[in-house]
Length: 604
Image 1 (tube, rainbow, N blue to C red):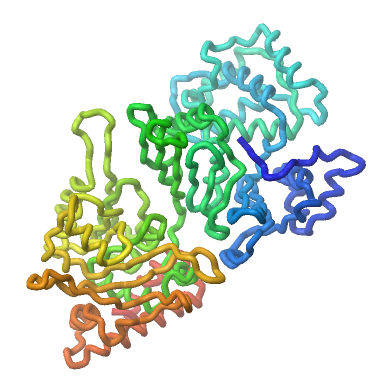
Image 2 (cartoon, rainbow, N blue to C red; image 1 turned 120 degrees about the horizontal axis):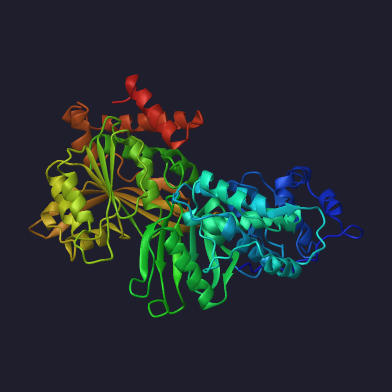
């Protein structure tokens, strides 16, 4: 349910405070925006704001990371499909509010909605075709709503009266379960037969009520319910509900925000979670209280159900799917790395070096791994292995493998270990593993030993911790195998003075070898992040083991001139900088540009 951080004013009326009065006070761009018919509910929302307590919000068609420094933002921006978001300031808390502005926000239509749904039971018929096409379901629902609703500018009849009228309607044949089952909507032809067979008294609604009813029906019956606006907003990275209370989001620009969505009752929360699990095809129960899967849009969701395993109540976390991955040049824009680091990773991956990206949860490991795949040779055959599909690789010859877990004891599970063994028979040029956490790690190092380049993410905050985890239970990689790993990127989410939270590569390390006599691992920092200046130090300049001993010989540089490799590194950094200056930052555009540069003989 919605829990606004302010007491909304009464609906505007002609006279003291009309919609036009409020609209005339808005900036011209916002006036134009709310003047469109599909955005009229946004003007209604602004009319309800207590403008004596909070100023008229700024309006931005697009928001940028440059706004990170705004301490108490008060602004509205559109998120598509006629929806907008209000970032509402809270000067008493570190988190500001995230308020989705929906057509149903101030519409008192519960009884009308119930009446409409009862009519739809007979309009939408359980046909022979169980369509899974969401767009077809949406079209059928919209068509049905237009059949049962009559739109009038002024409707005097109360919603209670509409409900009574419905009860008196003898021509409506009710179904025993009293529920609208969109999952079993028949095809359009079948639905058309039902329209002709049944007669009923239509429900009269205002244009605003109809817009709200249509929005709610599509949102709740086809979409993901109250979470739909959060999933629609491309600026949101994570959505989390920790039990009873507010739902929180991690925003790309405004960091952690509390939403206007709140669960106040355990029954309400559990009911929502059960419906959500059914929609993703993984029904949750007290016997199987944990679900880890993907939403229809590719976002990753983890659900924990029941108070016996989660003391604050059922909870869920959604990691949003990025339509187009963030590119390496965009990471440079964000300050995560710099051009020299990007050029270094370009040289490492082109040479088939094995690489792990390590750090804590939400440190940007998968984002980084996606970004650097553009440096892999374009002709490579790539096999990726994941629990939940998150990786996006630009190469055409990409085999994407995903584990399978069944609830029954049928022996049909397919693990990371199984997929990795299968991948070794597929002659890949690169194996990408979503995350190493178990016995598959030992197979990964055997793959490295036999010359298969491997890239993966890993949960460890330092190289020392990474090695400890690799060589201990349950991974148990032999210590003399560890030096098959060449590069370790340590990444973290950090608080940057004057800039707020951001993600930074803390260090890039080269694994040199294992000293069996002293039972010690030799590794060196090549790059280090300086938190005082928020810059990166190339600590390995003129001292890189991999550049001098591995990369230089492959480029034909004589042993007595190995320092020339650093000039090649800087040349690649300048190429990336020029591509950036040409405003080619899109993930796929960058990949294609690198191919063109290679074909032109500008890189080796």
